[in-house]
Every structure is written in structure tokens, then in C-alpha cells.
Amino acid sequence: MMQAAATPQQDTLNRFISIYTSLSKDNLNSLDAIYSQDVVFEDPAHRIEGYDNLARYFESMYTNVTDCRFDIHDHAVNGDIAFISWTMTLSHPKLSGGAERSVEGCSKLVLKEGRVIRHRDYFDLGEMLYEALPVLGAAVKMIKKRLGQ
Image 1 (cartoon, rainbow, N blue to C red):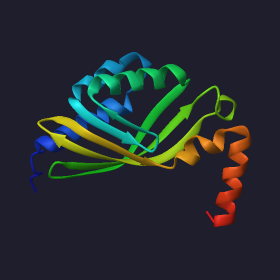
Image 2 (cartoon, helix red, strand yellow; image 1 turned 90 degrees about the vertical axis):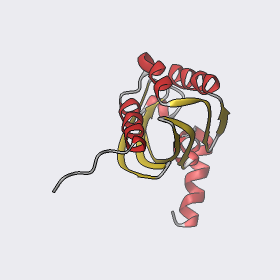
Image 3 (tube, rainbow, N blue to C red; image 1 turned 180 degrees about the vertical axis):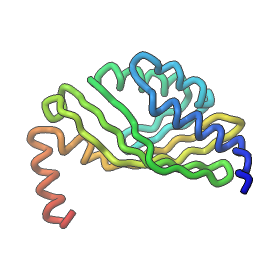
Image 4 (cartoon, rainbow, N blue to C red; image 1 turned 90 degrees about the horizontal axis):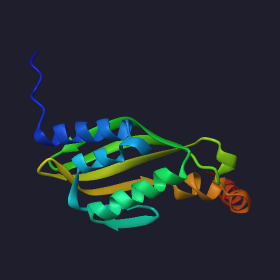
């Protein structure tokens, strides 16, 4: 059976995945190849408008972490919308004594003309950040336990 040709949206998603799985402090400029100049990026802690602001955010994030990498699990494209599930593994000197932490999440992307114009990340900010802080972490874990999570 013949395989259908990849759509332009699938090509954009494949390029996005390729860039994110190899992203590091040394190649942050590669993000320019996938985001539009007027991109809107959101996650549980931020809303960033415009590529220049997003580039500054990534520079700051990667400057402060010891390591950060993304492992992509599943992905799908439906028209101009794409979804990706991932695990982000990071180590930060101020979180968990610099030990690696892994957080599961997913991203919803809106694609237009070979670029990402909207990027929304969904993940548990408590798992990523609050649980790694000395005093607050114990409180968050206790609350989750009481809620049965």
C-alpha cells in the first residue's frame, strides 16, 4: 500500500519535533525556523507575545538550567492544529538540589504557512516547580496525598 504524502502541516510539525528534541543552550537560534514573528506562547506560568520576547524567554530559561531536554511521545495533526505529548527532563541548581526532574506534558500548536503561530503547553506546574522547593514542596505533596492523587 502506498503511503500518503506528508501535508505541509505535518512537515511543519516534524520540523518542530526535530528542533525541540535537539534543543540546547547552543542552538536556541534554531527556534527562529519554526515560530512566526507574532507567535503567542502560553504555559501555566507565562503568556509571551512575539518571537523576540519568546527568544529572550528561552535564553533566560536555558541560562538558568543545568540541563533541559524534551522527549516526544505522541503527536497528531488535524488541519492547522497539532498536538504533541512529551516529557521534559530538567535540572536546575535551585530545584531538588540540582537533581533531574521529569514532567509529563502536552502542547497544542496552531500552524500557519509553515510556522507555529500559537503554542500552548499544558503540564502540572506543581510537579515541575512547587514540589521541588524545600518547604512548599512538602506542603504540595501533602495536599495531593489528601486529595488522593
